[in-house]
Figure 1: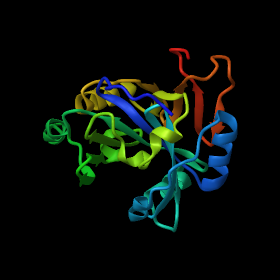
Figure 2: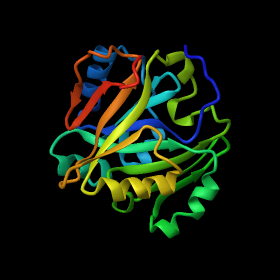
Figure 3: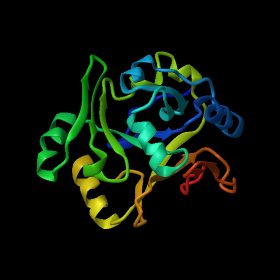
Figure 4: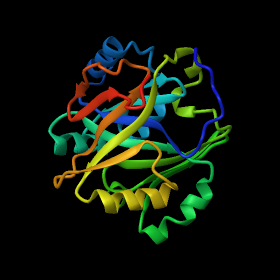
Length: 227
C-alpha cells in the first residue's frame, strides 16, 4: 500500500502505451517490474478499447488494446508498426482556466468528462503533436478515478517520473505543451523528423543500472533522478 501526499502540480500522473496483445504486455510488465494486479476499466469500451491500469506509488502506467477495428489506438499501432506510446495524462489544479486558453493555442478538444471526483479533457494529437494529451483535475487532488476504487492497496513502490516524446520540432512542440499545461513537469522532447511520439517512460524506484524494458517503440527506463 502506498502513502498518498498532496501533489505538486502540474505533473504527469499517468502514461499510456497501446499494445496489440494486452495480456502479453501486462504479463511482461508484472514479471519485469513486480507490478501488482491491474485495474480493468469497463468505461474504456466507449473508445473501443480494453485496458489495464497499474498503480505505481500514486502514479499510473496504463496499457490499452483495441477491442475491435477502427479505434484510434489501433490506427496508432498500425502507423508505428508495433506497440507504441499513446497518451500522456497530466494532472492540473486549474482545468477551467487551461481550457479557456486552448483556442489561443489552436488546440482542439476531442473528449471531455465531468464527474463528481474528476474533470478531464483530451486534446487532439494533431494539434499537440507527440501524443494525445489529457488534462485531468481529480477531486481531491490525491484521488485518481482511473486507477480503480482500490488502487492504493494495489500500488507498488515505484513511480512514473517523466516521459520523453520524439517530435519533428522539439522547441515548437515544447512551447505549445508548456503554454497549454502551464509548464513541462517531467516532460522532455527530442528531435525525430518522423514524429514517432511517446518513446520513453522514466520510472523512479528501480535500479539505476537496470536495462531498459522495450515495449515496441517505447522504452521503460530508470528515472535519471534516481530511486
